Image (cartoon, rainbow, N blue to C red; front, side, top):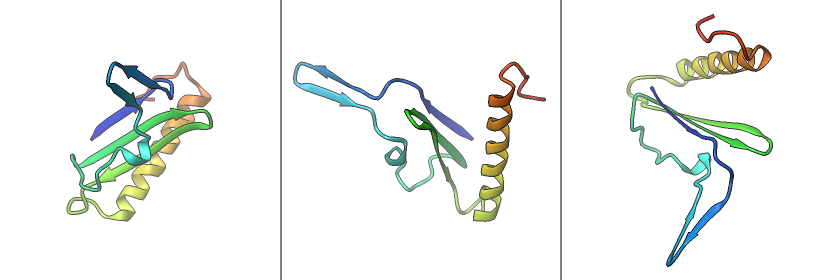
Length: 88
């Protein structure tokens, strides 16, 4: 599983003859899985946005929906008790 986490402010950088902008997480994927599973996460004013990309020849939609629910449970527990260990 690959995890991409963007936690820098939404802004653009201007250099002579060049402008760099953040790519929203919704546009960061190509439609072709680069790994068995990839999680793209980025911080926004309204919260954390995540996108799950997976190889359809390895996983079915039901398996990935269950994985996403487990990730949601893990993140909710981390927010509820930030001092807890992730393995607990």
